[in-house]
Image (cartoon, rainbow, N blue to C red; front, side, top):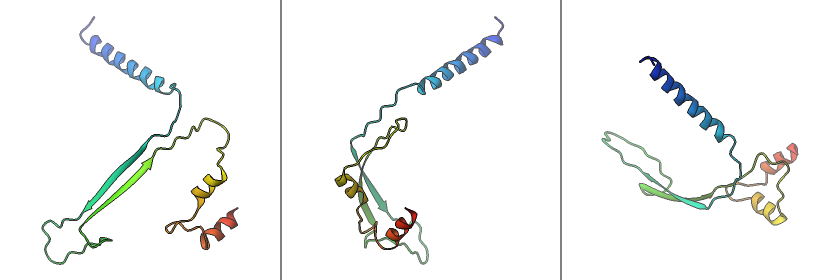
Length: 116
């Protein structure tokens, strides 16, 4: 074997091994399941380094450090399955009810009725 042929053969073998790994990933079964709840803590801290002159910072609370906790849960949807998911009346009411930040009356309701 020539000294230049050996590195080329090694590169070809490496490339072929990666191609087979990538194609195998597309053949794995899809079985989505919802995961457990996860909680994140977000901290916003404002520090003015080397501030000279007038500086303005808007923070929605009267402090310079804001901590927020967010809980989320993974949802799983199998996009390969056909059909529709059915919700009970209680589930449908829970997921579509209005909140103070997400109203479903007034202009929102009127627009939704025009679309439907």
